[in-house]
Image 1: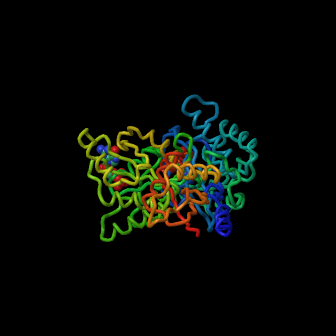
Image 2: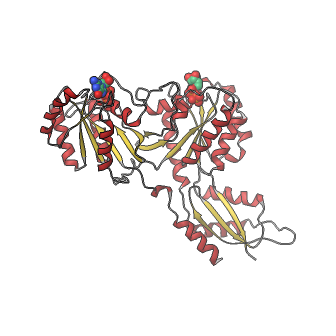
Image 3: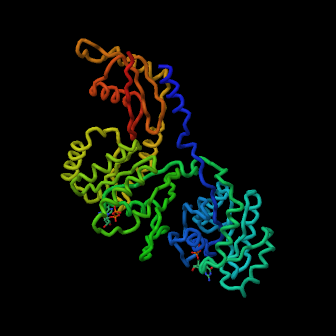
Length: 455
Ligand code: GDP
Ligand code: GDP
């Protein structure tokens, strides 16, 4: 038993997901229309951020994973930043302020063709007081002749302006080299709530259940464009979405946004992609189309999440199409097919109308937090001791296995090891699981129980 405990303790020392170092964070700030989104698209090498000519359109912070010369970093896109403005713009300004606080470095973008405005000067003050390394970017320098335009930006006191053309890609490689030079290896800010890379979620489900509709709905439709560049192969893209103040990384969303053509073998690749996404995530959000009969494929995707040991939330989408009869039928289908999964929370919603999409984040948080739950050895043994004396294991072949000791060596998902004097029935194991779930909150997470027999 000592050996076992040593092994268990070692596992306990293994890094928890929450301890993972996160890539450094680069915030892009500047007034509206200076070309921030264009620059981000340039940095990402793909068109994902919305470029618009109308200034002042409210945007939340959006995060993208980027890399340059083999180093990963996170880009935070802030809305425009107007200082001393009222209403909506003010919230955009606050977003930018928060983004700066949580960034490891800042790209301050100025439109070289417009020059320095009083807003820019206010922004400079805030940037200085933040103490963060800043690179001053003079954008829209489309040709060498215009470079002289950028020179007066020295006056901002942020050092040498880097003249680029986000639109044409002029000097963007040079800019990225400079960025890499000031970014630390890992994020130093590590602020909770914006601690990215931690809450990772895979949005999965068979084709047409509404994944891309829901993703757009959660991200804010106006902010994210589905963009088809013919013939380009794109890497999986992670998207950062804040839901009720909690930041989530939606992994591998490129496959969701891309309209996948149904060619032969597509199913195979779709299921592979699902598997990959689930493995990168802490939480699986499985979408079902409630307006249609539950399919084998639906059940398989849910099973994939459980088998991978990830937390789970089931979403019944297209609830706007569900009448009372269908509701009853759907509930029956779930009860029949998902007997062992009564621990998973289900959220009925409509990605199309937005009905109840605001209920999603609390179910996600519950599942995620319970997935991390740890029960102390003392509590666990008290609980099991009482349980076993009230409901001892049935006698089998003249023997009655006894529980000696139990411990939870790891979380994510919670894993329990029970030491016994003999083989434990499947039914009794299930009984223990159910009672554990009643005593401690494991809503939304699978739990594993393994038994080790000691003579
Ligand atoms: P944001 O509001 O700061 O995100 O600005 P956008 O990226 O949406 O760009 C605003 C406008 O400036 C768009 O019409 C872009 O096409 C244009 N723009 C962006 N970068 C450049 C550039 O380097 N040169 C020129 N000429 N126009 C640019
Ligand atoms: P995906 O293949 O899982 O990404 O599914 P899509 O998001 O592309 O949605 C497939 C179809 O279902 C589209 O025609 C959507 O408009 C529609 N759809 C998605 N969500 C809903 C919903 O909540 N209600 C209704 N009525 N239709 C929806």
